Image 1 (tube, rainbow, N blue to C red):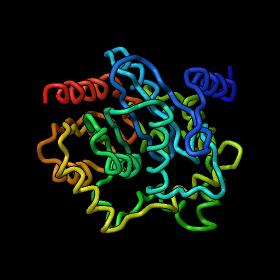
Image 2 (image 1 turned 90 degrees about the horizontal axis):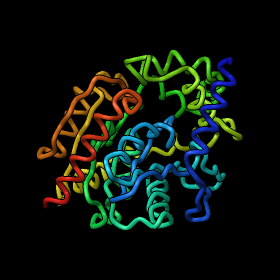
Image 3 (image 1 turned 120 degrees about the horizontal axis):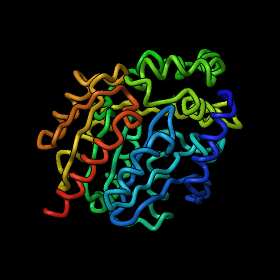
Image 4 (image 1 turned 30 degrees about the vertical axis):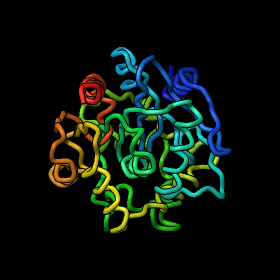
Length: 295
C-alpha cells in the first residue's frame, strides 16, 4: 500500500473516531472519548484534534473524558470567509464549543497558539477551569515573533507561495526536524494526514487567516499573566525539551515565571511531542486533575 492510500486510511480512521457538532453556527469536529471529568485539549497550528488522538486514548484509559475539537479554519472544521480568526475570535468559538458539547467545568490543556486561545476561553469563565496543563505554548506574547518555519505564512503572497509547496511529501522533513525527535513516533502516512487537514477544500486559505490573526500585544500578555497569577486551580507545565520552535530555554522559562508554583516536567521530544510522549503527558494531566480534587 502506497503513501497516498496509507494517508487516506489514517484520515478516515480519525474521522470515524470522532463526530461533527455545531457551535455558533460553525460546524466542527470533536474527538470525545472516555467518561469522567472532561479534559478539553486545545490544539494550535498547523494542527487539529488529530494531534491529540494518542493523548486522548491515554486519558480515557485513566478514567477521564478526553475532548479535542477542531478550531475553525483547521482540521475538519468549517472555514467561513467572514470568521474572526484572531486569538480572541477562536477563543470565543472555544467557549461556544464547550457549551455545545454540554461541558460545564473542565480540565484545560493548551499547546502552541492553543495557549492564547485557551487563555481567552479561561479568562472568560475562570470558575469553570478545574486545572490547567500547559504544553509548549506562548504566554509572554507581547512582540512575539513566529518561528522561522512559520514566519512566511504571515506575509501576503509569500505565505500563499510557501503554503503551495506544502504537501504530504514536503511536510515530512519539516515534521521530523521540528515536530518529533523520534521519527518512529510519527509515520509518513500520519504526516500526510496533517497536510490533508491543513489544506482540505480551501487549499489552506483559512489557515493563513489564522496565522495573520495573531494578537501579540502588551494587553493580551497582561491578561494572560493575570489569569495565571490569580489562578485558584492547579497548573502543570509539560515541555518537549527538544522543541526548536518554542525552545524550553526561553518559552519554558517564561511559563515557569508566569506560574512559579506549577509542577514543571521536561520530556524528550520536539514541538509535537504529543506524538512521542502521549502516556507521560496523560500522566501529568491526570496528576493535575487529581490535585484539583484535593484542593
